Figure 1 (tube, rainbow, N blue to C red):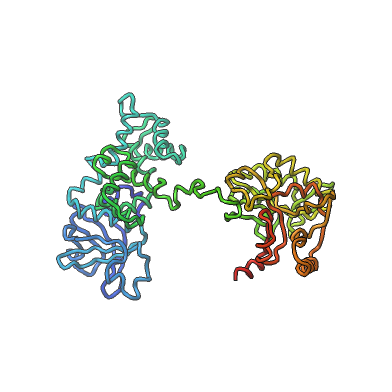
Figure 2: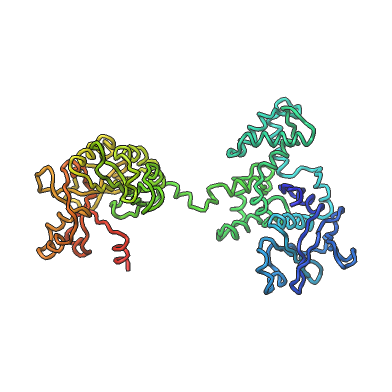
Length: 532
């Protein structure tokens, strides 16, 4: 756009059109011609040049315009072979004359289109008197409001407030804006006017606010739905809410309620006009969030058994890059927990100096101390959710280091660890509501009938306990499955309560013999098999 002028008002649109710009004029034969379009100084005519036509013919009277259409809304712009050459947002059409002819134009950017559309619509609606808008003698709805804000801050009533106070006011109206940016804008405007010092007058304050606090994409969205004005009336707002927001059954009362809730100016609220500032507040409010605001908090019934819910799960959680490759890094656990994972896998191996370490097979060179991993999990476990965290321990350690693991778990996790034995009179797991703030260990467990301080379990899943409940043929099939067996110490086994891992054979066996506190794990291949 010429001189990179920021379009934040109808007056700015007029100034832009008076200066003019190059656009493509589309003929009915689908040919396009570059022409320079500009508004006559008297704002009665739209002209274009160069043209083979007589200069008196290469113009269009503003009062003959019936409609200004945004996008490819005429047969010429929708014609075959032409429509694909430019995006919809870069086209607009001027419908004019008693025969409703069209002047079809293509601009370089959507911003240029929006500027012309807003300016022309305003001229069609209000006519010649808008010449005063370039240097407006009457304040607009917006400038009246921000001017009243300035007057309230001008305690001395001398027409000035200090820069610090002016900066704080604008920041208060736009909390996300940096103070340094506001101060820089004041200094830029003062320099352009040969004004210096800490005193800010009303004109500079209003100009700074309008330039800083106008989001172009929101301004041009308002333009599309505004009936040729710098604000949305109740009918304009009804159309926006229905067409753009997809709300059915919109009424004027609903529109007026939106205005009264979000419009900052008393005049706008009284007249049911939503200014650019009120429109911005509305679009940034929870009423326009793409997600249901109710879902900012847990709104589902959380009193069902734990197994009735889906959760986010992180496997090979220590890997920094992806599920299979990359180095192990402690920040991976922080990221997973902050993203809401409620199941975290920790693969533990024998480490030096009798201290267990965490890594995935491909990341053996980047080992993490098991105790450090527990520290991080304990610190971030409930940062994003208060509901139970399942800690999936995959221990490939010798018995002495398993005992060290158990000591670390009890010392670091402490009272957060859920160790109450399952209630055998129950048939379902406790609910997430009942397990708030608790960490559950998922892992191998020795048979309850065993009195030994250690025993054998399978390396992949502990199918031993399940096999005790099966018939001889089924038991022989499991025992001959080829799983590597390892020793498990009693200290680590006793920390597993509601999430005991068992081997899955089939759904019938699980339905018949599996206890509610036992969990089966599936790799991707097996999961796809059952899925299909």
